[in-house]
Length: 469
Image 1 (spheres, rainbow, N blue to C red):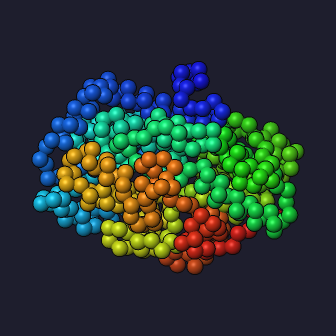
Image 2: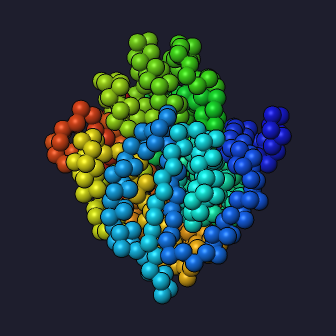
């Protein structure tokens, strides 16, 4: 049991999952702020009153970290919203039954704060009377937003958060193997992937590089003492062990504190243990510091596969040449053969448009942000009254379509939990850019798809190489 919170619903057999309670407590703490302004009951009454209204406007609230530590995830917001608003259903309205409804999107900045995320969600419900809320970008955003929505009875779709963190954050429990055990949420849904997909994205790359180099099957884990780090520590090694019949040995670098500045002890642990492969889940500045120190202290693993970092070009540029052939996961790329369900725009056109609009390199979060609004439209097509929040929430739980992020089914037999749609990631490596990149512009560094084990629809665009020889 967590002594601080008294939480006992997370199995003690996987104690690391208990740290995911942090995300849930942050959401509930923020909900307490909402309660001070009128209470959860007031939120539900507000929702009911708007649901009974005859408004011909459907209001969608979008909670996003436009400022603060998570702002990189929200970088594509302006471009994505511009395209969404220009698409048919948003520009001309959507016909539900005999009525054509206008759609209004109301954006709220979470400021990368769980407390603020819950506060602005409450404001969207109470002051704006939104019908649906969509949100993205890490447990710090998605968990408190979803918690408030579930409590208030507001349909919600979230993304870019490992499904386990979202599920446990809302009060669900996981078995000793990391499977959903209990907890079904009436109003909230999510799409992304989880720790098993991380493993099965990284492990094939390890195996290939190990064959090339004949390196020892020993991997190092840089997992901090935070929600993501402890979850990875608890789940990642057991899944690797099960997948490989204990062929790979794990070396834990220790549960360090976020924003540490000296990783010498950890690096020496990896060196003395003979670790040749590397996985992590740190804050971006922590990896930047660690990776520079690892190079200085001559620990150079044959392959680095990183999570939570190196997702955006800014992270890569900050490391310069040390970024070469560092691998990570990608849940959206412009190389996939997917199209917008709103306009028919291809993934490649989507990315080129972003680069022309912003003058910056495409980022993978743009795909998931766009998909939030595709999913909403798919649900609205299935209801008789868009202000009937129970009906809309039920429709969200049964969305099954293909859009800019590919096939997505919230009610699939293979879904890990009710209302969860899985997007299978591919493995990418950062390499010097070339004219073959999307749009023909040469960027200093570009992500190349080097492994598509989990999603064969995405073509390979580069060759997997060892991070260090």
